[in-house]
Length: 306
Ligand SMILES: Nc1ncnc2c1ncn2[C@@H]1O[C@H](COP(=O)(O)OP(=O)(O)O)[C@@H](O)[C@H]1O
Ligand SMILES: [Mg+2]
Image 1 (tube, rainbow, N blue to C red):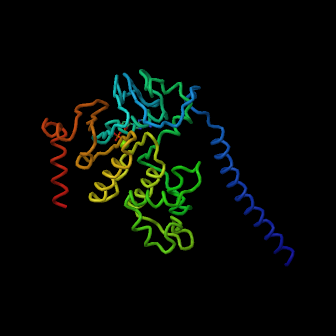
Image 2 (image 1 turned 180 degrees about the horizontal axis):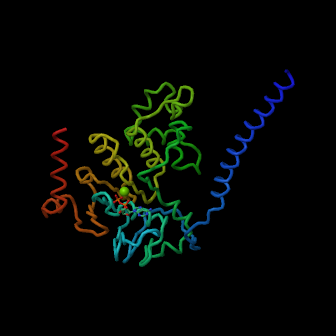
Image 3 (image 1 turned 90 degrees about the vertical axis):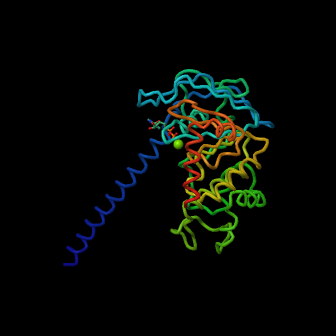
């Protein structure tokens, strides 16, 4: 009986191991494929320094469609972003705002036309050198639950030694310092409830921590793609204004579908189906009484009713 028993145990163990092994093979295949991915853009060979003053960015007559879709998101689109300008792009979902950010950060290349940074075509620039000068907070940004608050912010500039004072300053600018100080372990709290004494922040709090990362990064060109969608209107307004102040001598591109919170930008661009339909300061656009005016008054009404 005991022999039969151990025989069965053996078989059971063998099958258990096979399952584990299969799991392992599947995972390692993912990793293998990941490391074998070829970049779909070709790296340039012009080196860039880290800019002391922000660069002039010229988007010239670009057209673009996603590889799997013939529909043109941009057709002969141009935009000049002056050194240190604070630009806000507003527009309905699907207008092409995020696509523009992807083109600026060279995740894709335009099919026609070119983007120039200080007169050099983006395609000719060493991509890592461009990234050193660029900070992009994407809509679906990374958040690291297995790390602490401090590390999540530090991630913005992890090539340098950690600067605790700057981390706190960044968190204050992003309206995050207060709730972080309420955590038992403060800046050393792990950002996931799966860990002992870890905490799961709300979506709005996560966004604030991610924004703090960009204050900490302090790149010459900072792009925020709808960074405040889960943050309450009042806090959002404060954060936006601090962004303009803090990045005073940097170029800032803020993207939002909320018309009512970008009013302090130097220039507001209304994007619709890949086209600039209106641009100007808040005052100018309000005087125009067109799309911006309509959307702004509608959304402003929505807020006062809340
Ligand atoms: N990876 C993709 N492949 C194909 N189409 C896409 C992809 N990403 C976005 N699109 C399409 O491009 C258009 C513009 O999208 P997007 O730039 O994300 O808009 P916005 O950020 O203004 O809301 C949308 O119609 C969207 O469906
Ligand atoms: Mg978008």
